[in-house]
Amino acid sequence: MEQIRAARDQGQVLRVRGGGSKDHLGDATHGQVLDTTACQGIVVYEPGELVITARAGTPLAEVEALLASRGQYLAFEPPRWGGPMPSQATIGGVVASGFSGPSRAARGAVRDHVLGVRMLNGRAQLLRFGGSVMKNVAGFDLSRLMTGSMGTLGVLVDVTLKVLPQPPASSTLRFEMPQDRAIELVNRWAGQPLPLDASAWWDGLLVLRLRGARAAVGSATERFAQEAGGQVVPVEMADSFWLGLRDHQDEFFTRARHVVHERRVAGAALWRLSVPATTAPLALPGETLIEWFGAQRWLCTTAPAAKVHEAVAKVGGHALAWASTVPQPVVLPPVLTRLHSQVQKAFDPDGVFDTGRLWPRARG
Image (tube, rainbow, N blue to C red; front, side, top):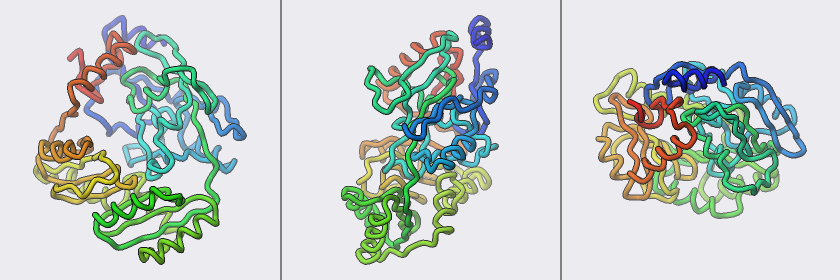
């Protein structure tokens, strides 16, 4: 609290930082570091209630190990993403970044698992939103607003999350098929009572993961093999594949980093595209990887930014430059820009956390 008050009084900016595993995300930031790693520990864990509360600086690995010991897990599969220190990811950083792994389409996003938070705003006021039970209907769910805020609204003190039992069975299958066929099939299957958990398509290969009751997984595995020629992937290979995809260490992202960061191909960028799941293949050059049953698409291309934004906007989606050889500003409609500004001023009227990480700094 004292660091926040001092920064406010002196007109300084604070940059909230946990383990540093996501330092590479967002625009170049300003400000003195407010380190949350000293704020560690499990506050409450109730396996029978499927709820855990942990302080923001608690290592993600510690939380996941505790859950695994009781046969539970964070169903949204928080990614590590190969930043400078991926193993140092904290549970506060998981919520503040708001990113989910391969199972997001089936199990929900980070925000769907956040039950409550305590946080310090720009006035050093300790605020509590949400609760510690799954049925919380007290009013506006401001705890979820902190999800994805990247420390620009305040600093998380602790978070309360919903957890789930580990599925008793899992199976991964691979199919050879073009992009349009993969999008059509996955969306057809996703609309049926099947234990689909995750999907990925790249370079003519569709990979599906099934999770759930043993009977349901076994039945679906047989059906997909007969209906679409799916081949079962050995468990070790499957686990390695999904971890690599989750943490952006698979072949697609390795090649994209090589193009953008190492070769620095002129105009090259890796884009994260959010579109309706059933959207047909976009008429954009480059390599595409598709996740979340079609709703999240990664595009490595040299196409101009304006062309990418235009193509995605036409189908009702939006595009974010994830990595680029040249700076790519965040493009938001004027209405959303005003909304962001109003929310930020409500939590942080003096701009203590105005680092410029998500959008240009208001104070310059």
